[in-house]
Length: 135
Image (cartoon, rainbow, N blue to C red):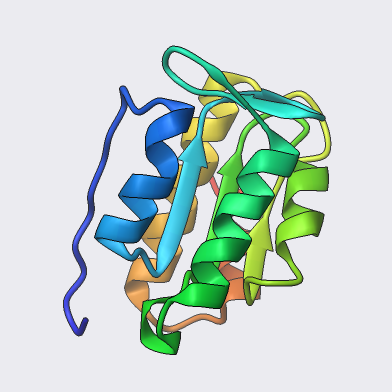
C-alpha cells in the first residue's frame, strides 16, 4: 500500500458500505453526503449512525492492522456525533457540528486533500488550513 489510489462511488447505498470497506480496505474513508445527527443520506437510502459505527468498528476489529482505516472524514451536516463515536476505533476522525452547504463541503475537501498531498504538514495543520484556506 505504498501508492495512493482513489476509489469513488457516488451512487453507493448504505447497504453496500460494509462490502466496499471490506473489499477496498481504505486507509482513508471519506463519506461525502448529506446528514443529520442520527443518520447519513446515501444515494438511495439513509444509514443510521449507530449502524455505520458498528460496521466500521467490525471492520477495524477483524482486519489486519495494515488494513485498518486510519482517517475517517464525515463531510456531512451535523456529523460530529458520528465522528466522536468513531474516534474510539479510528486514529483520526473529522466531522462537522453544524449545517454545511455543498459549496463549503467541497471547498473543505479540496483544501484538505491539497494540504495532505503536499506531505509537509501534520494532519491537524492540514485540517486547520483546510477550514480557512481559499485555494
